[in-house]
Length: 69
Length: 161
Image (cartoon, rainbow over all chains, first blue to last red; front, side):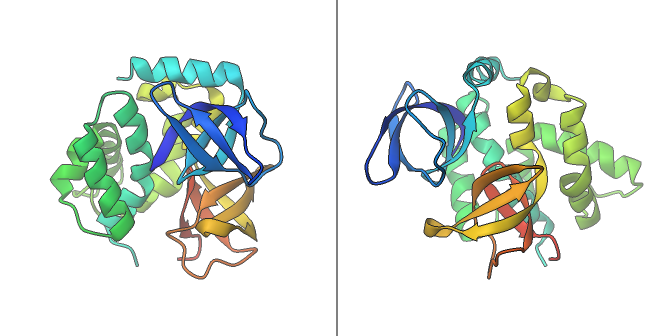
């Protein structure tokens, strides 16, 4: 599944993956870069972290799609 | 060469998840689009138009401007995804007005260079000093230094295709 919304990294695993929290669910994703840490907001596509997002912009975006038109 | 329908779906499918999360698309429709994007199974034009109304409003405007009757014409489709799509974002057309800068950039189509071949069918690409992984599922025989167009988390097509 393509997840074009940000989730929060809540755990980094030793195997190079992380757990991402989307409020309604949690998903595991592979990390290919070395700049991801717990607390970061990220976008995941096909079970891979594809982008790190500044927290303020992640929260703004989540609010924006709530009243999407 | 890709058909108009295939081109449109490959570029637009990553946006479907945003529509799903926003409540503007049903889970059933999302699953149908996902299946088609993965397998190449054809979908009707009507189904795609009803799934992405904003994109087709822009395509119809563009077709008129190009003096081409059919907005599904491959020339209109390529002009939209290769050139105009980013301008609509720059102009904060429609819902883009509410999106933060980083997401507007994520929504743009970028020409990127492949700098590494990653596991799981992913490619590390670089554009405008940004380096990030994208799915390479749509790209056959991807090689380092190839130029690809990317949209959201996907490489969509080689630039020379």
